[in-house]
Image (cartoon, rainbow, N blue to C red; front, top):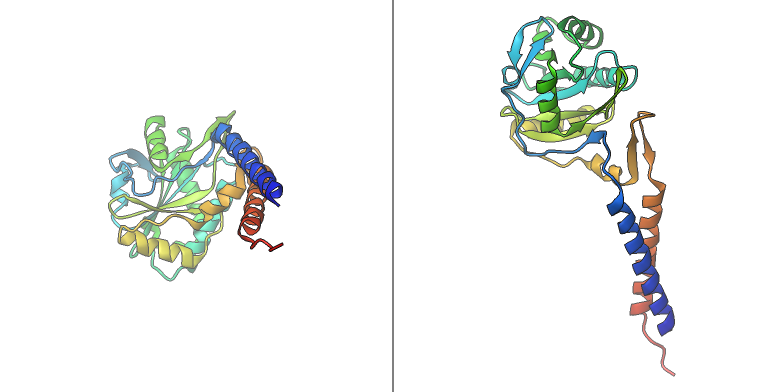
Length: 256
């Protein structure tokens, strides 16, 4: 029995060391979201709104605010993301402009206020004359765009005329403190309501979806998430090897 325990212990250590060595040597993704919870975004950054006026980012953040990042000629995730934001704004039992605001920023410095106005007209279809001023579309130069992307941990990569990028919205408090990240292109009204409520109090919460990032990695080429089979398999093997080892270790010895 002792040699079985020794064998399992060696197997467990070998798999564990090999797996962690592999994960440690893997390079971080060039594209994705790297959460900066509790950091404060630079509210002094300058952008142009959809009307062509030069504004400060802080001019639009005086209540809980949903930040979304897109570029206006995107052939992939951006339009579904804007559709998702538009849909949840229409479903949530909170009033835009009273309980929260929305700010969409283009990360393509070549985008213009005119394109921003087109996007607002085509995708923010739930807006009325009353709440229209509270979902703003902004464009800016390279320096200001890079500063806000770095501040929130939103990593993109330009490939030709297009960009590889993740899909997420970010909640900030009235003071500009990052409090929550919500991932994907579809958002539940309950999740957004909770995130807005927490942002109003300056309470930051880690996103449950971050747990999924251990099992899934973002594929910027295909613009989708894929299962990390090697990492998941190694984790399962380690888990069951540990359980079996503990069972054998703690199992009472039979008397001769």
